[in-house]
Amino acid sequence: MALHSVRSFLSVKPSRYFTAATFLLAAAVCLQAGAQPAPATGAGRSRSWVATWGAAMLPAEAGRAPDVTGKTLREVVHTSVGGDRARVWISNRFGSTPLYVGAAHIALTAAPQRASPAPTTDLSATQPGSDQTLTFNHAAAVTIPPGAEVVSDPVTLQVPAFADVSVSLYLPRKTMVSTEHSYADQSSYVASGNQAASAALTDPKAEKSWFFVSGLDVRSAGKSAVVAFGDSITDGAYATMNENRRWPDDLAQRLAADAATRRAGVLGVVNSGIGGNRVLLDGWGPNALSRINSDIIARSGARYVIVLESINDIGRFVTDRQPYGDLAQRLEFGLEQIATQAHAHGMRVIGATLTPYQGCGYYSPDGDKVRMAVNDWIRHSGVFDGVADFAKATRDPNNPQRFAPQFDSGDHLHPNNAGYKAMADSIDLSLFTKSR
Image 1 (cartoon, one colour):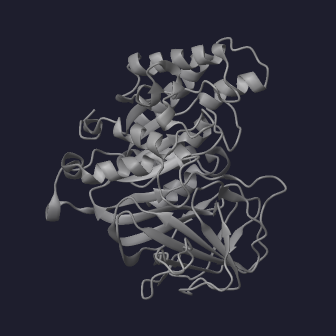
Image 2 (cartoon, rainbow, N blue to C red; image 1 turned 180 degrees about the horizontal axis):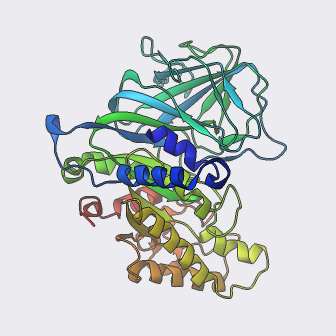
């Protein structure tokens, strides 16, 4: 069974569509995909598919789903590793009707004009000569069933590391956006008609969400990806728009610059953060436990996951006026489930401590006691293969319940660019070169 078949399988309920034997076969294939990467370097290392970018999908907001009928979507994504071939994932995970894509293209994004006399941050144009047509089983169009995800055929394209890439989809039939990643801190574009192959879009309208496009893989030496799994702090809320200053972006830069991680074949970084996400209940998007397969295990080459979740569970107890009770124990159970299921697929799991939040709208002293209890469990339980102590990296030494002033975005919940960099810089890179 091909990897894309396994990934589509994980997007639906096995009991409805598959026999038990098929389920076991798919699980075995996934487990094989999570095997330890070979340590060979340079020309001796085989080339494999690895995720260079990804986004966690969630349902479009009720009453605010854009109508993109007859439009071209140009989605701009930022790579973490380069390769000589590329393929694109398109998701209809939350659609209730089939999604018909009439044309799809991939190209390198043209750099914006930053110098005078006419500086611009527009990223809607692509580099001339870089455009490639995406096909699906050699066809230019594809129909994606409700709840499913498909991957394109590979195309030959030299994709650089840390580069912007444009994926363009033309949607000729009636299409309301159902599946998206909102608040992407990245400009993408919508234009009328079929402009998927055009280097310059006519009258593009900027958007701040990714619609339907959920992943970009490249073929590269080595086969390991790191999945950053979390909420808005992982998603990069308050990071500077279009500058790729989220902590997973900063981590990708560190991994690429480190000789030991390069030798170990640690390559792509996938950001699977969703703003407002919770471990135990749906909120903004599906709960974390329901996302394990689609947003961690199914990512191409996924070998490591860093888990930063729970602060929204804690804070919402204040806004929902609920007693905390055994919340810490229930959160620990949920986080352990993430680790257990990732371990079952051969992945290393790094637990990240919850950053301080005193002063934000849903802070409470009782909630902070839960946060500190969960952090103590993350550090000492032995559930994780390593710890990223983000709380220690970002807290004010004089008031550990708050961010250090130089790391606070101003809302006392999310870091600023410097805070995100401090988080990434605090991660021990040897965690990515040790075997379990």
